[in-house]
Image 1 (cartoon, one colour):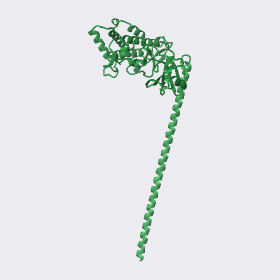
Image 2 (cartoon, helix red, strand yellow):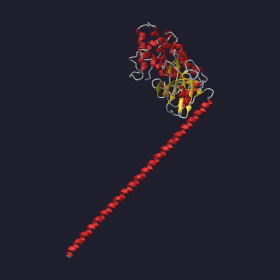
Image 3 (cartoon, helix red, strand yellow):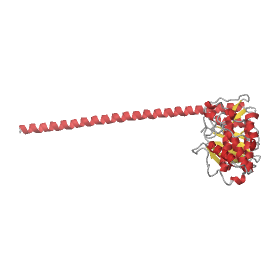
Amino acid sequence: MGISLSLSLKVFIDTTLHFAGNSRRSKLKLIVIVSLSATTSLILTCLVWITCRQKEKGSLLTLQKYVANESKIEEALKEYDSLAPKRYNYSELKKITRSFKDKLGQGGYGMVFKGILQDGRIVAVKLLTGTKGNGEEFLNEVISIGRTSHVNIVSLLGFCLQGSKRALVYEYMANGSLDNYIYSEESKIVVGWGKLQQIAIGIARGLEYLHCRCNTRIIHFDIKPQNILLDEDFCPKVADFGLAKLCRLKDSALSMAEARGTVGFIAPEVFSRGFGVVSTKSDVYSYGMLLLELVGGRRHANELTTSHSTGNYFPNRIYDCLVKDLQTHAIITEEEEIAKLMTLVGLWCIQTNPGNRPSISRVIEMLEKNINEMEVPPKPFLS
């Protein structure tokens, strides 16, 4: 019995120790789990706090930058106060456009709405979405066009700068932009070759005014069909001065830190100074590409749906076709003569060396010449 009691006692003690050990291990596991959870929570809390602080700091910096930009724009507008057009507040624009009801178009810049002023004039209100850079494009538009007054330059009638709201109020152009009349077969009936030549001359006269006849020379830097607007009589007007640069009349060259313009229309020297200095001849190059677009799109609507996505360099194709035409047969129609004349002028305008390009004044003279008086320019080699 003593032995049995001893065995029972031993079993009891072992069992007790076993459960005690399990209890300690459970407690240890619980302590480890709690500690890990607490540490994880603390880390997550710290991360959230840091993220919030960074967002707060970023928002503050953005706000400070925005306020600084707004102040800068306001200061610049005050400097040109006598030249700047009328300033509207946002509520006035809503009234003019009937709460932006009649949309005319949309692009990367924002949306354009039709509006009517109190005096009955129809206008186009360009509502800008977002703010690019430091607001330079908006400021360029207001100040550059505010300095101009010419039949071939679009009139800026007013602007809005109210908090984040930015808008430009233009005269209304009933026939939209020139690119609508390049590739469409139907447009040939509306705009014949004679009218197309007059449009080309009108654009050149607008550029001549910007380059030579303003108090401050203006280089546009974004001449392309989309930026040429047509009124009810198809009179062309140069528009969209967001990339324009102002320089003194005595300055023949312009210092620039970055390239600007639209691919396919940018002069070589604008994206690489190795080709020469940036000047009014840079606009001449863009104008030359516009002329080739007019001719190429009109004569080969099905073949040349876009001049800058093809494998061969577009001006080379135009040049080869022109030389072949001149060598194989005489000009037989007035339309054909106009097309070849515009092609020759366009090819002179896009010479790689800016010094070999004509001035825009010379371009106007060339467009009014007889084709037999024109020389064939060297073949473009830049691709």
